[in-house]
Length: 456
Image (cartoon, rainbow, N blue to C red; front, top):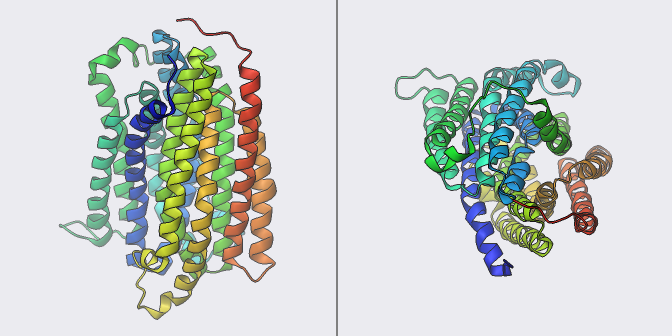
Protein backbone atom coordinates (compact mmCIF):
# COMPACT_ATOMS: atom_id res chain seq x y z
CA UNK A 1 0.00 0.00 0.00
CA UNK A 2 1.35 3.39 -0.96
CA UNK A 3 1.35 5.84 1.94
CA UNK A 4 0.78 9.54 1.44
CA UNK A 5 3.18 11.98 3.05
CA UNK A 6 0.52 12.83 5.66
CA UNK A 7 -0.08 9.17 6.46
CA UNK A 8 3.64 8.55 6.84
CA UNK A 9 3.92 11.58 9.14
CA UNK A 10 1.10 10.23 11.31
CA UNK A 11 2.70 6.80 11.60
CA UNK A 12 6.08 8.37 12.29
CA UNK A 13 4.68 10.61 15.02
CA UNK A 14 2.89 7.67 16.66
CA UNK A 15 6.37 6.33 17.36
CA UNK A 16 8.29 9.58 17.71
CA UNK A 17 6.02 11.43 20.16
CA UNK A 18 6.02 8.83 22.96
CA UNK A 19 9.70 8.16 22.32
CA UNK A 20 10.47 11.88 22.47
CA UNK A 21 8.54 12.11 25.72
CA UNK A 22 10.48 9.18 27.11
CA UNK A 23 13.84 10.49 25.91
CA UNK A 24 13.14 13.99 27.22
CA UNK A 25 12.03 12.62 30.57
CA UNK A 26 15.17 10.48 30.70
CA UNK A 27 17.31 13.51 29.87
CA UNK A 28 15.46 15.37 32.62
CA UNK A 29 17.31 13.06 35.01
CA UNK A 30 20.60 14.64 33.93
CA UNK A 31 18.96 18.07 33.81
CA UNK A 32 17.75 17.83 37.42
CA UNK A 33 21.13 16.45 38.49
CA UNK A 34 22.86 19.41 36.85
CA UNK A 35 20.48 21.96 38.38
CA UNK A 36 21.03 20.51 41.84
CA UNK A 37 24.78 20.37 41.24
CA UNK A 38 24.56 24.10 40.56
CA UNK A 39 22.76 24.57 43.87
CA UNK A 40 25.67 22.76 45.55
CA UNK A 41 28.15 25.25 44.05
CA UNK A 42 30.08 26.11 40.89
CA UNK A 43 32.83 23.55 41.62
CA UNK A 44 30.30 20.74 42.00
CA UNK A 45 28.52 21.85 38.82
CA UNK A 46 31.75 21.80 36.82
CA UNK A 47 32.89 18.42 38.18
CA UNK A 48 29.50 16.74 38.13
CA UNK A 49 28.75 17.97 34.64
CA UNK A 50 32.04 16.56 33.37
CA UNK A 51 31.38 13.24 35.12
CA UNK A 52 27.90 13.11 33.60
CA UNK A 53 29.37 13.62 30.13
CA UNK A 54 31.84 10.78 30.76
CA UNK A 55 29.07 8.41 31.86
CA UNK A 56 26.91 9.44 28.90
CA UNK A 57 29.78 8.77 26.51
CA UNK A 58 30.17 5.22 27.83
CA UNK A 59 26.43 4.62 27.97
CA UNK A 60 25.79 5.88 24.42
CA UNK A 61 28.70 3.83 23.12
CA UNK A 62 27.08 0.72 24.59
CA UNK A 63 23.68 1.77 23.25
CA UNK A 64 25.30 2.21 19.84
CA UNK A 65 26.84 -1.26 19.90
CA UNK A 66 23.48 -2.89 20.58
CA UNK A 67 21.64 -0.61 18.14
CA UNK A 68 21.59 -3.42 15.62
CA UNK A 69 18.59 -4.79 17.54
CA UNK A 70 16.18 -2.10 16.35
CA UNK A 71 16.76 -2.12 12.57
CA UNK A 72 17.09 -5.92 12.42
CA UNK A 73 13.91 -6.45 14.46
CA UNK A 74 12.13 -3.83 12.33
CA UNK A 75 13.19 -5.64 9.16
CA UNK A 76 12.08 -9.01 10.61
CA UNK A 77 8.75 -7.48 11.65
CA UNK A 78 8.21 -6.00 8.18
CA UNK A 79 9.06 -9.35 6.59
CA UNK A 80 6.85 -11.35 9.01
CA UNK A 81 9.77 -13.31 10.57
CA UNK A 82 8.31 -13.79 14.06
CA UNK A 83 10.85 -16.29 15.45
CA UNK A 84 13.83 -14.14 14.48
CA UNK A 85 12.55 -11.20 16.58
CA UNK A 86 12.98 -13.12 19.84
CA UNK A 87 16.41 -14.41 18.83
CA UNK A 88 17.67 -10.89 18.11
CA UNK A 89 16.40 -9.54 21.44
CA UNK A 90 17.94 -12.31 23.53
CA UNK A 91 21.34 -12.06 21.91
CA UNK A 92 21.23 -8.29 22.29
CA UNK A 93 21.00 -8.75 26.07
CA UNK A 94 24.08 -10.98 25.98
CA UNK A 95 26.00 -8.21 24.24
CA UNK A 96 24.91 -5.81 26.99
CA UNK A 97 26.33 -8.06 29.69
CA UNK A 98 29.63 -8.53 27.86
CA UNK A 99 29.97 -4.76 27.36
CA UNK A 100 29.00 -3.60 30.84
CA UNK A 101 31.64 -5.39 32.90
CA UNK A 102 34.75 -3.83 31.26
CA UNK A 103 32.88 -0.54 30.88
CA UNK A 104 32.27 -0.34 34.64
CA UNK A 105 35.93 -0.99 35.37
CA UNK A 106 37.04 1.70 32.93
CA UNK A 107 34.65 4.35 34.26
CA UNK A 108 36.04 3.98 37.77
CA UNK A 109 39.69 4.40 36.71
CA UNK A 110 39.79 7.71 34.84
CA UNK A 111 41.79 9.79 37.34
CA UNK A 112 44.91 9.65 35.20
CA UNK A 113 43.07 10.89 32.12
CA UNK A 114 41.66 13.83 34.07
CA UNK A 115 45.08 14.77 35.44
CA UNK A 116 46.62 14.49 31.99
CA UNK A 117 43.94 16.73 30.45
CA UNK A 118 44.64 19.54 32.95
CA UNK A 119 41.50 19.38 35.13
CA UNK A 120 41.53 21.08 38.52
CA UNK A 121 42.16 18.86 41.57
CA UNK A 122 38.71 19.65 43.00
CA UNK A 123 37.09 18.67 39.71
CA UNK A 124 38.95 15.35 39.69
CA UNK A 125 37.99 14.42 43.26
CA UNK A 126 34.31 15.28 42.85
CA UNK A 127 34.04 13.63 39.42
CA UNK A 128 35.62 10.46 40.75
CA UNK A 129 33.11 10.29 43.63
CA UNK A 130 30.22 10.59 41.18
CA UNK A 131 31.55 8.07 38.66
CA UNK A 132 32.36 5.41 41.27
CA UNK A 133 28.62 5.20 41.97
CA UNK A 134 27.31 5.82 38.45
CA UNK A 135 29.30 2.86 37.09
CA UNK A 136 26.67 0.57 38.64
CA UNK A 137 24.04 2.13 36.39
CA UNK A 138 25.77 1.20 33.14
CA UNK A 139 24.24 -2.29 32.74
CA UNK A 140 20.59 -1.32 33.35
CA UNK A 141 20.94 1.78 31.15
CA UNK A 142 22.16 -0.21 28.13
CA UNK A 143 19.84 -3.16 28.81
CA UNK A 144 16.86 -0.78 28.90
CA UNK A 145 17.96 0.64 25.52
CA UNK A 146 18.08 -2.91 24.12
CA UNK A 147 14.54 -3.74 25.20
CA UNK A 148 13.39 -0.32 24.04
CA UNK A 149 14.92 -0.96 20.60
CA UNK A 150 12.94 -4.17 20.32
CA UNK A 151 9.61 -2.79 21.43
CA UNK A 152 9.71 0.32 19.26
CA UNK A 153 10.61 -1.83 16.25
CA UNK A 154 7.32 -3.62 16.95
CA UNK A 155 5.55 -0.21 16.92
CA UNK A 156 4.67 -0.33 20.63
CA UNK A 157 6.35 2.73 22.08
CA UNK A 158 3.78 4.13 24.54
CA UNK A 159 4.73 2.08 27.64
CA UNK A 160 8.27 3.45 27.38
CA UNK A 161 7.13 7.01 28.03
CA UNK A 162 5.14 6.03 31.13
CA UNK A 163 8.05 4.03 32.55
CA UNK A 164 10.60 6.76 31.96
CA UNK A 165 8.40 9.53 33.38
CA UNK A 166 7.80 7.51 36.57
CA UNK A 167 11.53 6.79 36.95
CA UNK A 168 12.38 10.45 36.36
CA UNK A 169 10.00 11.58 39.10
CA UNK A 170 11.65 9.07 41.42
CA UNK A 171 15.06 10.45 40.47
CA UNK A 172 14.01 14.04 41.19
CA UNK A 173 12.79 13.12 44.66
CA UNK A 174 15.88 11.00 45.26
CA UNK A 175 18.19 13.83 44.18
CA UNK A 176 16.59 16.23 46.61
CA UNK A 177 16.43 13.78 49.50
CA UNK A 178 19.92 12.26 49.18
CA UNK A 179 21.74 15.30 47.80
CA UNK A 180 20.55 17.78 50.44
CA UNK A 181 19.65 15.51 53.37
CA UNK A 182 15.86 15.83 53.32
CA UNK A 183 13.14 13.54 54.75
CA UNK A 184 15.54 11.91 57.21
CA UNK A 185 18.23 10.98 54.65
CA UNK A 186 21.87 12.01 55.16
CA UNK A 187 23.18 14.87 53.00
CA UNK A 188 25.41 12.96 50.57
CA UNK A 189 25.98 15.77 48.07
CA UNK A 190 27.14 14.69 44.62
CA UNK A 191 27.28 11.02 45.73
CA UNK A 192 23.59 11.19 46.67
CA UNK A 193 22.73 12.49 43.21
CA UNK A 194 24.53 9.53 41.66
CA UNK A 195 22.70 7.01 43.87
CA UNK A 196 19.34 8.47 42.84
CA UNK A 197 20.33 8.32 39.16
CA UNK A 198 21.42 4.68 39.12
CA UNK A 199 18.25 3.74 41.01
CA UNK A 200 16.22 5.38 38.23
CA UNK A 201 18.12 3.38 35.59
CA UNK A 202 17.37 0.11 37.39
CA UNK A 203 13.69 1.04 37.75
CA UNK A 204 13.40 1.72 34.00
CA UNK A 205 15.07 -1.54 32.98
CA UNK A 206 13.17 -3.78 35.39
CA UNK A 207 9.82 -2.09 34.67
CA UNK A 208 10.17 -2.55 30.91
CA UNK A 209 11.29 -6.14 31.40
CA UNK A 210 8.21 -6.90 33.52
CA UNK A 211 5.94 -5.23 30.96
CA UNK A 212 7.38 -7.28 28.09
CA UNK A 213 6.95 -10.48 30.10
CA UNK A 214 3.37 -9.55 31.02
CA UNK A 215 1.99 -8.08 27.77
CA UNK A 216 0.26 -10.95 25.94
CA UNK A 217 0.60 -9.65 22.34
CA UNK A 218 4.37 -9.86 22.80
CA UNK A 219 4.28 -13.52 23.83
CA UNK A 220 4.14 -14.64 20.18
CA UNK A 221 7.75 -13.50 19.75
CA UNK A 222 9.11 -15.67 22.64
CA UNK A 223 11.40 -12.79 23.57
CA UNK A 224 12.99 -14.37 26.64
CA UNK A 225 12.76 -18.12 25.95
CA UNK A 226 16.09 -19.98 26.24
CA UNK A 227 17.78 -16.77 27.33
CA UNK A 228 20.87 -18.70 28.46
CA UNK A 229 21.65 -19.96 24.93
CA UNK A 230 24.30 -18.03 23.03
CA UNK A 231 23.80 -17.86 19.26
CA UNK A 232 27.15 -16.84 17.69
CA UNK A 233 25.60 -16.31 14.25
CA UNK A 234 22.99 -13.86 15.61
CA UNK A 235 25.63 -12.15 17.75
CA UNK A 236 27.76 -11.59 14.66
CA UNK A 237 24.80 -10.17 12.76
CA UNK A 238 23.98 -7.75 15.57
CA UNK A 239 27.57 -6.60 15.89
CA UNK A 240 27.95 -6.37 12.11
CA UNK A 241 25.19 -3.75 12.12
CA UNK A 242 25.64 -2.34 15.63
CA UNK A 243 29.45 -2.37 15.83
CA UNK A 244 29.93 0.54 13.44
CA UNK A 245 27.07 2.40 15.16
CA UNK A 246 28.88 1.95 18.48
CA UNK A 247 32.13 3.20 17.01
CA UNK A 248 30.26 6.16 15.51
CA UNK A 249 28.79 6.84 18.97
CA UNK A 250 32.30 6.78 20.46
CA UNK A 251 33.35 9.35 17.87
CA UNK A 252 30.29 11.57 18.25
CA UNK A 253 30.08 11.59 22.04
CA UNK A 254 33.86 11.49 22.25
CA UNK A 255 33.83 14.82 20.41
CA UNK A 256 31.51 16.31 23.04
CA UNK A 257 33.53 14.78 25.89
CA UNK A 258 36.82 16.04 24.47
CA UNK A 259 35.24 19.47 24.10
CA UNK A 260 34.37 19.29 27.81
CA UNK A 261 38.00 18.52 28.64
CA UNK A 262 39.03 21.49 26.48
CA UNK A 263 36.65 23.73 28.43
CA UNK A 264 37.97 22.43 31.75
CA UNK A 265 41.51 23.24 30.68
CA UNK A 266 40.35 26.81 29.94
CA UNK A 267 39.12 27.26 33.54
CA UNK A 268 36.47 26.13 36.05
CA UNK A 269 34.00 29.02 35.30
CA UNK A 270 34.21 28.21 31.58
CA UNK A 271 33.63 24.51 32.29
CA UNK A 272 30.63 25.39 34.49
CA UNK A 273 29.14 27.52 31.70
CA UNK A 274 29.79 24.73 29.22
CA UNK A 275 27.96 22.20 31.39
CA UNK A 276 24.94 24.50 31.73
CA UNK A 277 24.59 24.92 27.96
CA UNK A 278 25.47 21.27 27.25
CA UNK A 279 22.78 20.00 29.57
CA UNK A 280 20.20 22.34 28.06
CA UNK A 281 21.13 21.27 24.53
CA UNK A 282 21.09 17.61 25.61
CA UNK A 283 17.47 17.87 26.77
CA UNK A 284 16.47 19.44 23.45
CA UNK A 285 18.56 16.90 21.52
CA UNK A 286 16.45 14.08 22.96
CA UNK A 287 13.64 14.95 20.55
CA UNK A 288 15.62 14.45 17.30
CA UNK A 289 17.32 11.47 18.95
CA UNK A 290 13.88 9.92 19.48
CA UNK A 291 13.01 10.89 15.92
CA UNK A 292 16.13 9.09 14.72
CA UNK A 293 14.98 5.92 16.52
CA UNK A 294 11.55 6.27 14.92
CA UNK A 295 13.21 6.90 11.54
CA UNK A 296 15.25 3.70 11.93
CA UNK A 297 12.05 1.75 12.62
CA UNK A 298 9.93 3.28 9.84
CA UNK A 299 12.70 3.00 7.26
CA UNK A 300 13.56 -0.50 8.50
CA UNK A 301 9.97 -1.72 8.25
CA UNK A 302 9.64 -0.45 4.68
CA UNK A 303 13.08 -1.86 3.92
CA UNK A 304 11.88 -5.26 5.13
CA UNK A 305 9.13 -5.05 2.48
CA UNK A 306 11.50 -3.51 -0.14
CA UNK A 307 9.11 -0.61 -0.80
CA UNK A 308 11.60 2.00 -1.97
CA UNK A 309 9.33 5.03 -2.52
CA UNK A 310 8.08 4.62 1.05
CA UNK A 311 11.65 4.28 2.33
CA UNK A 312 12.51 7.65 0.78
CA UNK A 313 9.29 9.19 2.03
CA UNK A 314 9.91 7.96 5.60
CA UNK A 315 13.42 9.47 5.44
CA UNK A 316 12.16 12.85 4.24
CA UNK A 317 9.42 13.01 6.89
CA UNK A 318 11.75 12.17 9.77
CA UNK A 319 14.54 14.55 8.72
CA UNK A 320 12.11 17.37 7.95
CA UNK A 321 10.30 17.16 11.30
CA UNK A 322 13.58 16.97 13.23
CA UNK A 323 14.92 20.09 11.51
CA UNK A 324 11.64 21.94 12.15
CA UNK A 325 11.72 21.11 15.86
CA UNK A 326 15.36 22.11 16.32
CA UNK A 327 14.78 25.37 14.45
CA UNK A 328 11.98 26.22 16.89
CA UNK A 329 14.14 25.23 19.88
CA UNK A 330 17.01 27.36 18.58
CA UNK A 331 14.77 30.43 18.48
CA UNK A 332 13.87 29.82 22.15
CA UNK A 333 17.56 29.60 23.16
CA UNK A 334 18.32 32.77 21.24
CA UNK A 335 15.50 34.65 22.92
CA UNK A 336 16.01 33.56 26.57
CA UNK A 337 19.69 32.66 27.24
CA UNK A 338 19.99 34.45 30.59
CA UNK A 339 16.74 33.05 31.95
CA UNK A 340 17.80 29.50 31.05
CA UNK A 341 21.20 29.89 32.72
CA UNK A 342 19.40 31.26 35.79
CA UNK A 343 17.85 27.82 36.30
CA UNK A 344 21.32 26.47 37.14
CA UNK A 345 23.25 29.38 38.65
CA UNK A 346 22.44 32.26 40.99
CA UNK A 347 22.63 35.24 38.64
CA UNK A 348 22.99 37.64 41.59
CA UNK A 349 26.14 35.95 42.90
CA UNK A 350 29.23 37.88 41.65
CA UNK A 351 31.23 34.63 41.75
CA UNK A 352 29.12 33.36 38.85
CA UNK A 353 29.71 36.43 36.67
CA UNK A 354 32.27 34.89 34.32
CA UNK A 355 30.30 31.67 33.97
CA UNK A 356 27.19 33.70 33.12
CA UNK A 357 28.91 35.75 30.41
CA UNK A 358 30.52 32.71 28.80
CA UNK A 359 27.26 30.78 29.08
CA UNK A 360 25.29 33.47 27.23
CA UNK A 361 27.80 33.57 24.37
CA UNK A 362 27.84 29.81 23.81
CA UNK A 363 24.06 29.57 24.30
CA UNK A 364 23.66 31.84 21.27
CA UNK A 365 26.05 29.68 19.26
CA UNK A 366 24.09 26.57 20.28
CA UNK A 367 20.87 28.23 19.10
CA UNK A 368 22.20 28.26 15.54
CA UNK A 369 23.87 24.85 15.78
CA UNK A 370 20.83 22.87 16.94
CA UNK A 371 19.51 22.44 13.40
CA UNK A 372 22.78 20.81 12.32
CA UNK A 373 22.66 18.48 15.33
CA UNK A 374 19.11 17.37 14.57
CA UNK A 375 19.83 16.93 10.87
CA UNK A 376 22.91 14.75 11.27
CA UNK A 377 21.35 12.61 14.00
CA UNK A 378 18.13 11.86 12.09
CA UNK A 379 19.95 11.27 8.80
CA UNK A 380 22.14 8.75 10.62
CA UNK A 381 19.00 7.04 11.97
CA UNK A 382 17.70 6.72 8.41
CA UNK A 383 20.93 5.02 7.34
CA UNK A 384 20.68 2.63 10.28
CA UNK A 385 17.19 1.66 9.13
CA UNK A 386 18.79 0.66 5.82
CA UNK A 387 21.43 -1.28 7.82
CA UNK A 388 24.13 0.92 6.33
CA UNK A 389 26.50 1.55 9.21
CA UNK A 390 30.12 1.01 8.17
CA UNK A 391 30.58 3.82 5.63
CA UNK A 392 28.70 6.29 7.90
CA UNK A 393 31.15 5.32 10.64
CA UNK A 394 34.05 6.36 8.39
CA UNK A 395 32.26 9.55 7.41
CA UNK A 396 31.61 10.30 11.08
CA UNK A 397 35.27 9.76 11.92
CA UNK A 398 36.31 12.33 9.35
CA UNK A 399 33.57 14.81 10.27
CA UNK A 400 33.69 14.60 14.08
CA UNK A 401 37.39 14.16 14.69
CA UNK A 402 39.18 15.17 11.51
CA UNK A 403 37.15 18.36 11.05
CA UNK A 404 35.20 19.10 14.24
CA UNK A 405 37.82 18.34 16.87
CA UNK A 406 40.59 20.05 14.95
CA UNK A 407 38.46 23.16 14.48
CA UNK A 408 37.47 23.14 18.18
CA UNK A 409 41.06 22.97 19.34
CA UNK A 410 42.34 25.65 17.00
CA UNK A 411 39.48 28.07 17.63
CA UNK A 412 39.47 27.44 21.39
CA UNK A 413 43.19 27.72 22.12
CA UNK A 414 44.63 29.80 19.27
CA UNK A 415 42.00 32.53 18.88
CA UNK A 416 40.38 34.99 21.33
CA UNK A 417 37.12 33.01 20.99
CA UNK A 418 38.18 30.63 23.81
CA UNK A 419 35.18 28.54 24.97
CA UNK A 420 32.94 29.93 22.22
CA UNK A 421 35.52 28.76 19.67
CA UNK A 422 35.33 25.21 21.02
CA UNK A 423 31.56 25.20 20.39
CA UNK A 424 31.88 26.71 16.92
CA UNK A 425 34.40 24.03 15.97
CA UNK A 426 32.08 21.31 17.23
CA UNK A 427 29.26 22.55 15.03
CA UNK A 428 31.58 22.74 12.02
CA UNK A 429 32.09 19.00 12.52
CA UNK A 430 28.33 18.40 12.77
CA UNK A 431 27.76 20.38 9.57
CA UNK A 432 30.26 18.15 7.78
CA UNK A 433 28.53 15.04 9.16
CA UNK A 434 25.10 16.30 7.99
CA UNK A 435 26.31 16.79 4.43
CA UNK A 436 28.09 13.43 4.41
CA UNK A 437 25.10 11.45 5.71
CA UNK A 438 22.67 13.01 3.22
CA UNK A 439 25.09 12.21 0.40
CA UNK A 440 25.42 8.65 1.65
CA UNK A 441 21.63 8.20 1.76
CA UNK A 442 21.38 9.10 -1.91
CA UNK A 443 24.12 6.59 -2.79
CA UNK A 444 22.60 3.79 -0.70
CA UNK A 445 19.14 4.22 -2.18
CA UNK A 446 20.52 3.66 -5.67
CA UNK A 447 22.23 0.45 -4.55
CA UNK A 448 19.40 -0.95 -2.38
CA UNK A 449 16.81 -0.70 -5.16
CA UNK A 450 18.53 -3.61 -6.88
CA UNK A 451 17.56 -5.95 -4.01
CA UNK A 452 14.58 -8.31 -4.53
CA UNK A 453 11.26 -7.78 -2.73
CA UNK A 454 11.17 -9.69 0.58
CA UNK A 455 8.66 -12.51 1.12
CA UNK A 456 6.96 -13.34 4.42
